[in-house]
Image (cartoon, rainbow over all chains, first blue to last red; front, side, top):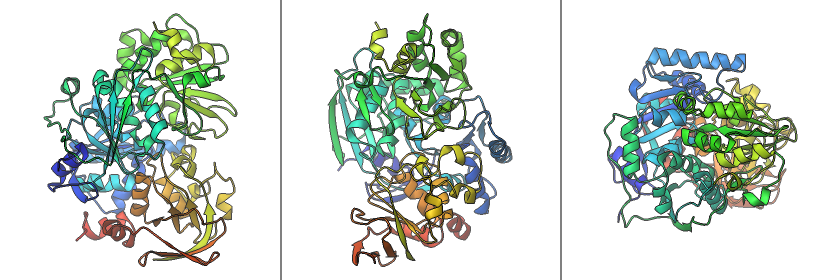
Length: 418
Length: 166
């Protein structure tokens, strides 16, 4: 019997014949924490009576969730992170460097075939470049940076066979929202998702990250893709590490397989207050919007900014509506400046904020007021997510957000794309 | 482990933003303070209703969303003794084991708010005193039971220095 990508990576890293359902202890190639989770991990590290991390070169901490600090309590937690990072000589990314899930692949820390944990639920993002990466909590993070290994239950795999190519004006965000709406928020709980087929092959690596990023929103442990020529070129451009891509065997055993034809998919929007509450954009078109958000670990990459700027060029955001733009990293911001995209955003009336998580997690940079509607390129729209439980958050692609803020209401982006 | 208390009932897909909102969790490591805001967006009076040892009982996919370990820690500090649900999201589930909060999988459809429950984790039995029925609970894998019975992963590492499941 053959193996899935998840079974192969966990076999390689544990030295055991890992099959779905087994529990293995496996070696970690990289470990990451952010400012919402690292302070508790540092506390656990000391409580566990550890002195040194297992390998400073394989560990990064990132300040992105509340960056720069909006509060004195947060400033103290950031101080603890800076001090720990200095003491242990680990990789450290401070305010303005970007979102952890942009930085980890962009800075070349992870490569195909790797096993990675991160104390952030969207760590599944790196599955797009064939990395078994999964979110953990702070105590697992502490154990990981001490021992360089962690126990894993080998997941079953849910295979998404995605045929056809996405039509004009429809993006990878629309595809993953559609899939989550179809299988629901716990459709892949405890499982690895494997995304394959012509629709994936057709996408850029950047667009693929958006799909793997949201695997957790269907409950999945990771969102894996095979490495193709595009992946290898992308990874070589970002990392000097050697790597060995992992493919699924033809006779691998899947817990579930679902096949889709994406060639007639329409732009999708997740309605308040769950990510699986998904509808085609036409169903919610006309809903008034007070704030748009373009950015986050889901859709703050250079391609996303190009798509949004392409729609906003020469136009103004409607009076009564605001737009917050948060590039996903310093490099993305620099590139967007070189290409003139930042100028387009600022001239259209957008507010540019620090590369990082922006207003997604409700700590700063655009908390909505009571009764307001927000449309965001983020990955979560839970009640209270953006810091106000009396606001309403819709999720869509960068194109849908850009089109919507021009009109002040949810708008089909295909009206603005030739 | 022997637990006894009354039920506070919730629905499906209770996410970690509902358990403890991001607007509180980023600013402090004081879990006693965070405990006052547990489940606030679903039930503003939740914290004041809980008595020592009570249970949170929910439907499927409890704890979905963010990986914040503040979620189980805030629940523990609100004096809840265990969470009982039809199914759990996996990061939350791990975080509970690691922080020493018992998580119990069983069919919760018939359990009502206010019911008095008693749980024997080792024996795998949940007794509903209010309804006079026993429910079967899904046993924990030995690795998780070991971490939980040692008081969580911090205690496990203090004792063994690394993972030790022998």
